Length: 103
Image (tube, rainbow, N blue to C red; front, side):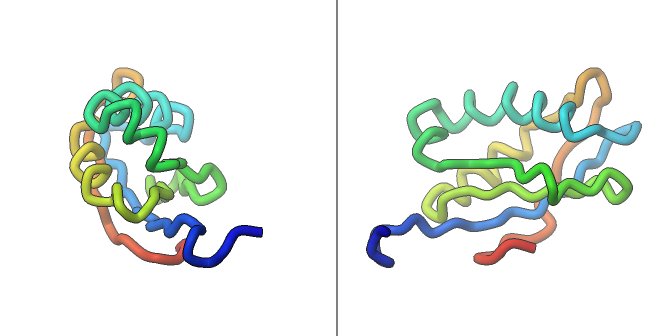
C-alpha cells in the first residue's frame, strides 16, 4: 500500500450536457476522446488519470462525472468547453460542480 502522501489526489467534475437531442454515454465518450487529449496534450492527459465514470452518467438529466488528478483540474475544465459535437448532435458541456469526493 502506498503512503498517504504518495497517493494521487483526485477531483470529480460534474458535467451537464447541453445538446439538441439526448446524448448516450458512448456518444459523450467519443466526443470527449476526440477533443480533450488534443487540447491537454497526450503526456499530460496520461498523467491526469482522467476517467469518465460510467455508473455516474445520468441519461435523463444528461449529467456525467469526470475524475481527474487534482493538479490537472483547471486544464480539463477548459478543455471540456471545447467539446461541441456528440456524434452529429451539436451541443456543449458545462461544469456544474467540482468536488474532492465523488458525487
